[in-house]
Length: 473
Image (cartoon, rainbow, N blue to C red; front, side, top):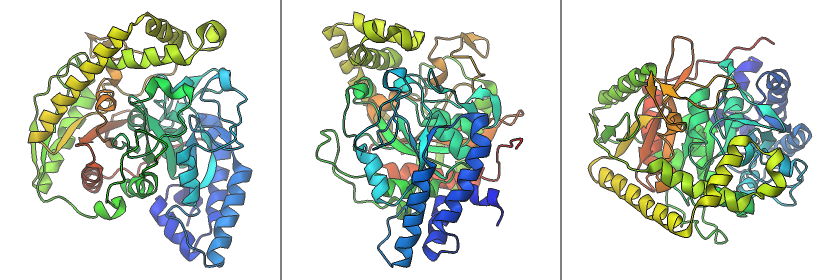
């Protein structure tokens, strides 16, 4: 088997080969490390590689098999960790000079969970400061470039994670999503990412730097195969009593659930959610064509009427007031991004009444989707209104020649952080320039298995894994 084919192999296949020792974890890990060393300088996906740790973990994984020990679901599989998650003894910067030299004394709960399941940690992946914007760039490590066009950004805030997976620099990546941060980079980089129902995956410890997204942030997988997302979720979904927002574990095995295909589903799709003014024509065309493919399964598909009001103001008020509490502007103004400074300053102007009003509007938005899901099983939208942004570009004044607000390009995503519904982004098409387009699949709360089943069905109808970004090595 060619080395490149091993780098793009599914995690489920890797797990089987490691168990039988057809390929050892050490062999696979070394091949992926070799590829990271060649390609990472071109895209800047990994900000802190941990190759020595990875080699030790891979060696231990192979020795455990020889001793006949019980194996975790992710035994020996190379995996990356986003640099917003604390890792014991490994530099964790949160993408900011404020924590440039921070070495945690313990793992984030989910990192510990993945380690207990047997992962081989390849390193930390790049992210913007505190994950504040859905593009990946910061003042320590710089910009993460898109594997399909290195003159464009990878998306964010899990941009390093998505770029790594797309480039064959590890089959599994741990990402997080506070307003689009798994789905936008998955769309831009042509991979699969899912934000599960809020509360299914514990968040602990809740450090001060997480306050801005306290009730919005979801941990989740970024992968190339839907099966691999299900495998990761079988490990990650759990109840943890120290996280007050953690919910009881569902009686579901996702890797088994996705083998089933619903006989009947009613799918509603929306290009605008009732408030988005514009999307790029290639994206609109791809989404409409992709949704129609579900009719091959005899599922009902129709355009749905949804009307969301004040979604971004609600989202932004919650986030910016959180950053205003989180970051000491007097102390750190000179070392954080100008856009983030403006967000903090905006957050400082809000009153308690403003915040309560936002919480009330959040409930109204939730109710709109609850009414939708009384009539439909699945909602489909574009993941992003635009194609990957060019390096140095941070926002749009116009989309398809229509004037828009600065956040318009990622407005299909953040409503589902306000509501906590499971939402995934799956590649659904490619532009004439060879750039990926993502389709968002949203399900009812706690029906993550349905989102995975629909994703798996689409993957079978329109597979994309034969496409690989090309690099001059």
